[in-house]
Structures are given as structure tokens and as C-alpha cells.
Length: 343
Image (cartoon, rainbow, N blue to C red; front, side, top):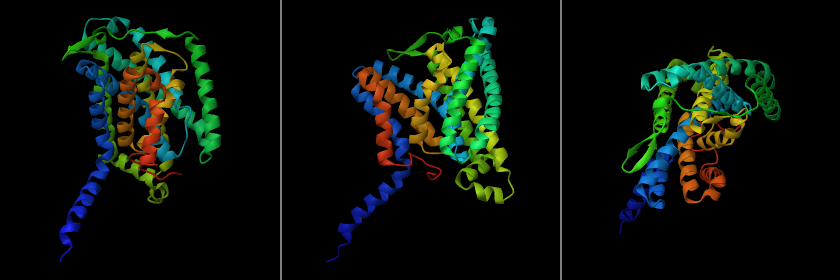
């Protein structure tokens, strides 16, 4: 008697599981949304929390995406990344205050132009600060993780104090541009306009980064440098310049994220970057070193979980993201979509 019929279903199931395995991280986001829908009794509340979670996740992604590339490509543990978030917020808000007429006008076009100018200024300044930070603080400690932690943490403290010197120690309360205040009503849910903008900006940035990394020559060099830097240098490419460029880009993205995060919270402080670094590190770790896609998925999971748990059980929200990180690392110890091996 043939045993083929008994084995065939097992082989088919194994083959299906293997085919679905690469897509498992992507499926976590809709699963999280579905679990939130089942746990939250009111559909309107679920929709509001989902949009809020996606917006929060997008802003965390903007801040964390540069760090995950720096971490993966340069093997640098940069605790000073939060300083760029704070600088970006203060520079961007300063520009918005200077352009108060445009930001306060009841015109969406003028408001977006003001925000665009604030974002560009923040990215330029934080990119320049990032270049100096890499040259003066990070470059001397390549390959020495303990020294990296110490000197970058020191750099973070110094930059925070410089912010206090320039802008003062007080918290700055800010208002969003006129047409981005308030919210819209959809299916009985109140959805803030600014959060919809944050979702759109984050999605566009993710698609742009994915295109650059996968469809351009510089993206190919960066991805190759993440996987095998010695081989890239052997082919004649100056990986050192790639390092500097990625660090500057990562710093600029942190500045952009700082502007958006400040407007999201409607308050900025010199220590805001240091406070958000916990979420950034969690996203980088669970996403996988050097992976923009993993960072994107991880940021969405963190944002959604934070909002759902804060609504259902506020006290548990303080540790929910730590629990998410532990669960992900127990499933995939190197993160969801690792690009490089742990060093």
C-alpha cells in the first residue's frame, strides 16, 4: 500500500508555511489592526485610535529610519541621535514662528508652504550638525561600541545644553498651522487633520527611501555596504564617503521627524529627543539592523499597540512596547527583517 497520500498533505502544508514565512512580518500589521477592532467595542473609537496609531508610527519611522541605516551600515551605536530630533524641532518651530503670517492664514497651500520651509530648514541644519557630529565625535570611535555609547551620550548632553543656551530652558507651546487644526468626522470617528498629514508624509518617505535603496546606484552601494563593506571597498567605491552621506541623511531625517513630532505633541523641550529615543531603539531592534522595511513595520506596530493599549488599559501602556520587543525577539532573535548579521 502506498504511503504517498498520507505524506502529500504534510508536504503541501510545509510548502505553504515556507512560502508565507517571508510575509509574516508584513501580516503582523493587519493582524494588529484586527485584534484592535475585536478588543475595542466602539467602531468609531477603533478608527480614531487606528489613524492615531498609524500617524504616531509614521513619525517614529521617520526618526528611526536614518538610525537603522547608520546602525546597519556603520555599526555605530549612536545615542546622540535624539539630539538631532530636538534640534530639528526647535529649528522648524522657529521658522514657523517667523512665518507666522503664512502658518496662521486660513489657506491650506500657505500652511503647507510654511511647514515645508520649516521641514527643509530643520533637515539642512540637522544634516550639517550630523556631519560635524560624525567627524568630531563618532569617527574616532569606529569599532568600539562601549566608547561609542559614552561619547555619543556625552554629545547628546552637550547639544541639549546648547539648545538651552540658544532657545532657553522653558518649554515652548506651539500651535499647528491654521488649516491643520481640528479634525474631520468619518463614520462617526473624529480624525485629526494633522495625523492624516503625518500618515501621508510617512508613507511617501517610505516609498521614496525604498525606491532609492532598490532602484538607484547609490542605493545598491549602500545595501552592499551593509552586507559586505570590504567587498564594496575592494570594487573601488569610497565607502567612507557613503558612511558620511548616510549619517548626514539619517540626521536630516531625525530633524524632519523632530518637527513633525513637536507639532504632534504641540510642545517642544530640549530633552524631547532623548525621551523619544526609547521608542526609536525599540523600532530599530525589532525591525532588524539595516532594514528600512523592518523599521517601517516595527514603527507601525509600536504606534498601533501604544494607542490601543493606552485606551484599553492605560497602566499597561507603559510596558506594552517592551513586551512587543520581547515577543518579536523570541520569534526572530535578529529582528523581523534583518539585513546584517549581529556584530
